[in-house]
Image 1 (cartoon, rainbow, N blue to C red):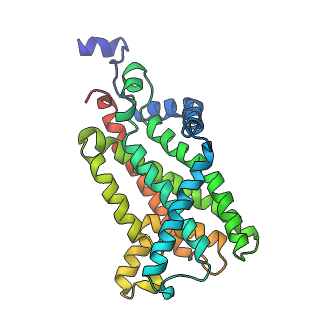
Image 2 (cartoon, rainbow, N blue to C red; image 1 turned 90 degrees about the horizontal axis):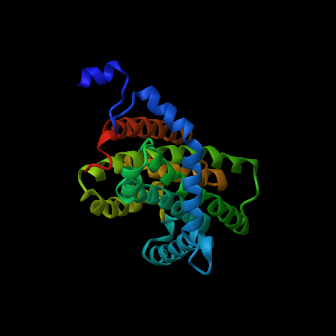
Length: 279
């Protein structure tokens, strides 16, 4: 029967298309993906009195709390001179990563009704999740720019380097969302481990301290600086802060991590296309 169906060009219901066809479907559905992300972004805080302002307020509160706590616990030598934008940049970029990871893990399991009722490339859901979080970067970067000026940083053309830095971070986070989405389908308990992973990366990414000033072992320092979350934080800081330019190797690491996670994540996610919504 399978041979007869194949001979008459009858596709199997819910079957996985060839890679070229799948990519074509993703491209043709791009407007739907963008609108899905945009509508969820608008609806996220509409019930709150301050609305979308919470997208910026929450990470600023986190920055204030961590800045107060670790400002008292850690010696001043562990922090750069312009600590406020240094800390806020780290919190903003890290929150983008952490939200992409946690929401990406739920992008299939949290949309089973949509997955089981409509035929579309399932990769659209992790992509829409990351795009939704990327929309929040616009007001965050505006606030970061104001903080940089308020703390003595001059307005420079180099600020535009934040655009490729955040594009690379978005590509990387999309790959992370692909991996997390499939892992959560196979083992639902993975979602319970994600907060511990994000917490570990938070403390290992140099958000409230300078790795160069705190870590003396060159091997450990090199590993921490190659951490992709720290890489993208460094690129954003380097765009705004004169005294903390991103080293050239950070851009190479940024491109490498983004390409590796996006391509690897997609080819990890795509083979299980038929299983999404059935497990």
